Image 1: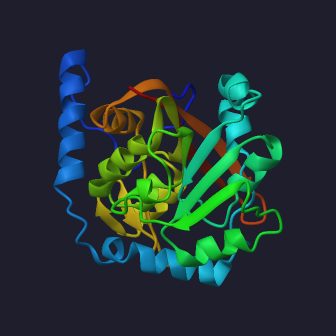
Image 2: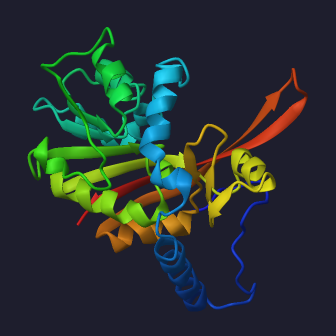
Length: 279
């Protein structure tokens, strides 16, 4: 649960005594999680209107902003090969599907899958349904704010093998994350899993937002277009999922140095990846 050779964190680092005992550190992390998730009530302008800003984002950029994401096969395929490629097929739910940049590569790789996909942006759902590879026979796509709308209205309880949260939790305020996980748990099978990929603390984008004083609460920021982004530490993600009743299968931070030669700058990108089992 650590990133070997990772560059130093320059934004919102944890502040506990270097020589504190492991028990003290765990208590500190738990208290930090409780404070950051409960002290902020989502009243900030950009947080309250996140649906409006994301809907405007997809109306403006359509499906041209994000590249197709092959995260399942890159990050977790070895773990789920037998599960997903079984002859019976599997059911996957993507919460926060956007324009479909994850679900369409997923169906292409695993054609036996049945996919549920939702997003709280009506424009995003329109983009998914207009995609050349959209199939109403293999996909159930619907508008849903997973932080407040019951997923069971569109997905039968306890029927989903895998829920994917790909850059989804970071788009909602910390005070709503537990509600999203509780909602997902209602549709997961008893032995189902949630796959997480999102932004990690110390990412170069966070450093820029921090330097521009665009922080809403600890590790939670608003961008210039009004959308929001949260940056996860491994400890925060672990405590978040454990508090929601999930078991930790794996959590890690992926770090990559990216050089923009035209601008002569080097960026330290950080993403968190995790597998969490429904207990």
